[in-house]
Image (cartoon, rainbow, N blue to C red; front, side):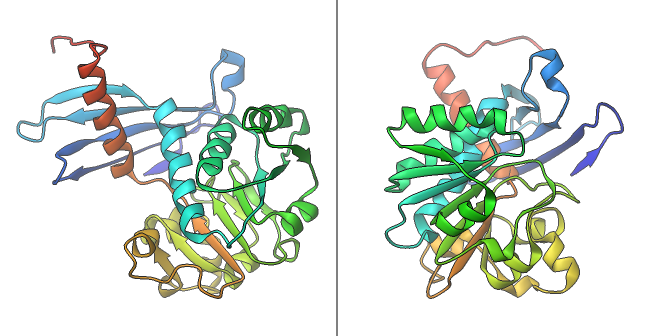
Length: 281
């Protein structure tokens, strides 16, 4: 669940669940506060709460900001690993916010990219992309969206847009797009016509069609539930993945079980390293 709260233009929500095999039970609460710069804070704020599955008592509170960035970037990288066109050399970045650096670094771990091109609604923020590319030893160039769509083999969009940024006619050739910014009703990064002509994958189908990037094409009737495949089907070998598709899109909406799994692993590591702080409740 994720909705506007009518204060500070914030979007607040929570996601939760239970992984019976790993015994991870809990929820992640937080959202997007677009005015946080005045407080010296990043816009995305979240906390993960874990509970003892045997008793229901709270067992841990874990800061979710860094974990969200890492988990989101990892999901994008998994899609790139399985769906990027063979021989992909150019990485296109749409968005230069806090999570963009994590996205670029994760993509570089799974792809053999030779250069990075990027665009952001606020050009002054592109230094983050340039600095990250330099850290990775990759040349970076700021470009307009038509050129980005024409030259990039893999495109990562990680913005908070509420209208399409990348248009259908701008994407040329064999391309994989990881659309990672849309996780709320009304948000949108991609032209619905681009979605309609692509082969579609996501982390959770119902969520993608209701609050993810595919919500708009679904509402217009240009795609149906059967047009969207869970990325897990590709990973396990039950779906061919890219196949002969020119354009593939992975809609990363964010799944609560991923947050719980990452938080659970972090708590275990913190205990091993003596960094966990225990309190009486």
